[in-house]
Image 1 (cartoon, helix red, strand yellow):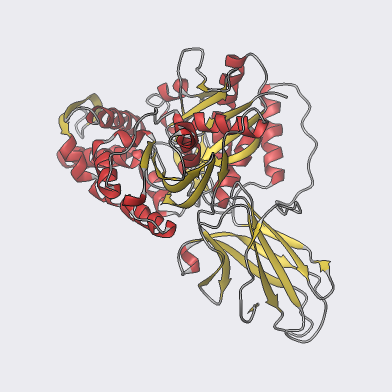
Image 2 (cartoon, rainbow, N blue to C red; image 1 turned 60 degrees about the vertical axis):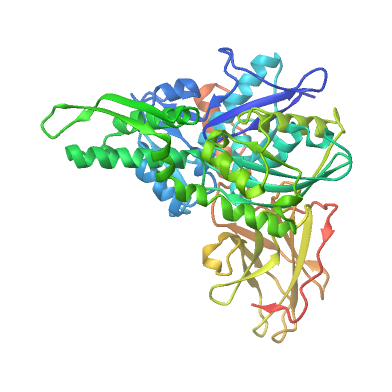
Length: 558
């Protein structure tokens, strides 16, 4: 069997690692010596595709066909507030798929975020194969702990399109704690927090570590908050300044926006070390009279901190809630681990120290630590290492729609994985043939503010008077936080047919079509046989699960 690689599929950069011959995780480099691959993909008019550094270099000359930040779009709806903000300033077009998902349009063709992410994963796979000198087909891929079911499934689909068997979706904070070696420090039970602020997502996880077992007690975060938001604030301010001075709207000039975006990111990195930096952009655009706009100004860290104070404040509530959900105080924690490139920003580090009342640990490279942890977990799955075990939790409440807009929780957040919950439903009409149930995931009591996972239709019910027929719905979440549903009619003992109509994502048929199209474009290999699938995702696998007690009282009636 080929070795299992660990992949950190990041918003800004991606990284791959593997266990070496001594079972130590190591980051794999490209032929040019790069230890991380920029998460950028570019298409030329002739159809050629560039990924990583080559793609990023095309951002200025080919901005409308160079896509970045796809992690912020994968598994998301186009009308989400943060997606709308991203679309307003991105030089490429973000459009709505028929099911409402956020896609990108390149050279007139709509492309799903899964396809874009697959290009990055395919490049990562190539880096690993060149470094190891052998084929690679299996991977552990990390995602933010706060990703919902749709985002996790979309990430798995991207792996399939890239030709990878994603054997496990692993939460990034858990991977980081494993790479830090938190289980090898000290004796007895240790309580730690992992604060993970990357390019596009934020996670906070509270963990207990004892005898090599990582038990996640609570998790929280914001899947639409990251370093790119700091970049965006700088970019917005400069766009406003240019408009006020020259009456030129840079948002309508893709090349100018690409140069400006890169300059803002460079300035932010400089200000992580220095208190001020010079931003110079000659020939940024032309003014109303055709004269060149040579933009130049000094930017200070204090100015950026003032522009982004609300972003910093958004980090506090998830941390406080995670501590509360874990039943702990900040002083109960022994250590706070920093993960993600944005934790280099001084104000972020200061806020973490204030929140948790201790200096955070910075003993690992925040850009590589997640991939290293994924590689270590890959070794555990392969049987090459057995010094740790991971016990994770559900990131969000999972429940059903009741009435017009109420949300009834069936499986509460922070339930230990794997987990299974049961709910009984009764018919409300005579000789009712089916029951229709809408599944949602989120943390609001208003169901419309939560993420719709899909609709479950239970058909072929036994005829009878109202209330005489009951159906048991079983919701299972596996160790990767992937949801599955089964149903049965207790009276007859037979399984009812279950159809999950997803509210988004790619169907298996669409995935196979993408793979076939890619194969036809790159080789003369015969296409894969078409799979008969209507996008139904139902599992009958049995898990070793922790069972929740069924809800007490009368069953919800539909």
